[in-house]
Length: 199
Image (cartoon, rainbow, N blue to C red; front, side):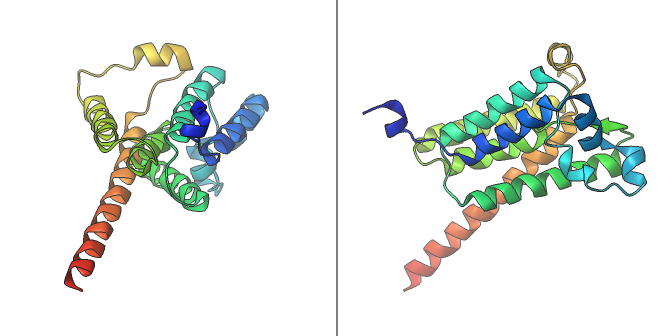
């Protein structure tokens, strides 16, 4: 049995990668049109709250986030692709809204904030990862989010690769969105098991 027969991948993260690649191919003009930019948002271009999470600083940035999305595809999480896309859009909106109202940020692009939430949910919903691996991966992401909020964190090495500094609060909000959805899933399962035990 081949690896992909034993561990099938999800196609929807690969579709997101394809969109990111297309937008990156379109170059600087597309990035400027898609990015979150405070003056344009304040002028009414609210689509940027969503599209900012599909645009990237360049190929290095795009490929780094695409690698994370391919990891999500490899984990092969359960659930309808429309729900996953809904999470992507909603998490992106939450991140952009937070950055707009709580930061003096001029511009922002990138999928890494949403990706942190996706990784948390995909690990838990994986159709083939063992339970301990799921929780180990989730714990690693949570530890990373906490570390990024401390003075010990430095983004210099990553910034030199992607061509811009890392907005760690985007990671935090995306991760919290994933944790919130995971909590809802766990509470729903607990409620269902309680109802079944009463019957």
